[in-house]
Length: 480
Image 1 (cartoon, rainbow, N blue to C red):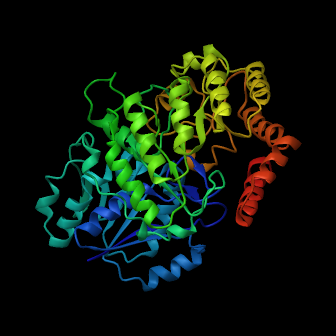
Image 2: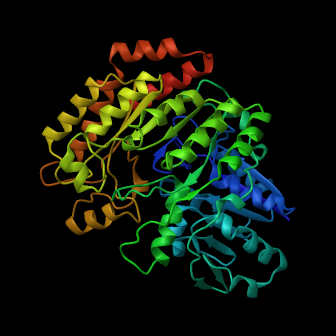
């Protein structure tokens, strides 16, 4: 049986970035969520194909032509909020008699929307736990098997069924290493990393912090949404963090290097967990010899030994979720971060030549004012960093921020897929209009990236001709 994972091209404009799921592509990222699921099926002997059509530079008309000629038995879609409308439209071009498997945060949040016809299946939460069981049931044409698969929603004979949840995958070390040969892995480049091609990787799942606006990577996002459905305690808002053992991290890195991949973007929601484990993970990267970047909290990077180990291992950048430089705002949104740790961690990274990338999230709290917006931007500009990302907090499905924003009347547009959240504010406050917040993001990008020193540093750092084009495209998208 042939199973094809489909990432359709956008009809117009940029494709949604599906790995994190909360913005649109500046550069493409290998979709680990798809690769884990596809690898499991391939290892069971199924004929598996992955089509990342935006990376293949295909248009939507190319996709329509492909649909007419493809002979797959089952189609799978990994759907995030920003592309649900596109995916629901794209399936209409496929053979209506073929089963469709949906997974990802958007189908997990609202399975019913994706059960439009019989032979539609929604795999809620972590797709790796259920996909082989569902495909086996489809192949055997045995509907009785479907009844016993936790985390599954499906439609048969015009009726929808929603099985109980399974919680979360407790031992991620039993999962296979993603088979990166299933995609055109040589086409993926990342201007933040020195080597090309690059790939993405996970060494842990979930973050234990309680930021009430948080949209983690799309795997953790779906995991969290399903956990909330299963959990009986309203205080238990996130499933436990699960960790990949250092020896398994090293094994995956060795497989990555054998493919000729030159760099790694680690997309863990939070990379630094225990100090002993951290040192072992860094040692694995050092021994294999692949440069990498990570996401981490500032307060996890005020220990010089931890930062030095990252530098020695080949870490070239770290993404921070700073959000605001006002302590009362950080406290109000549950960030559990002290403002003083921001500059402390950045100074340590600079000492060891690791590039800090700062993420600012405006409007996450009603305590935000025009004055706090200006203060945050001013303090950021004084930090002498080269990378920053700005956005307005958006009411993503399943977040506590959405619940509160709807209750308080802050939401201007409920459907986050109707606009680019990094370009348009979907919320407003009595003292801050959505237009002001939208304009402030544009102003912030221009003030930050159009500084001559930033442009010069970036141009001087470019070592590959292709990166110059990616940089210029990114600069245009960010500042236009």
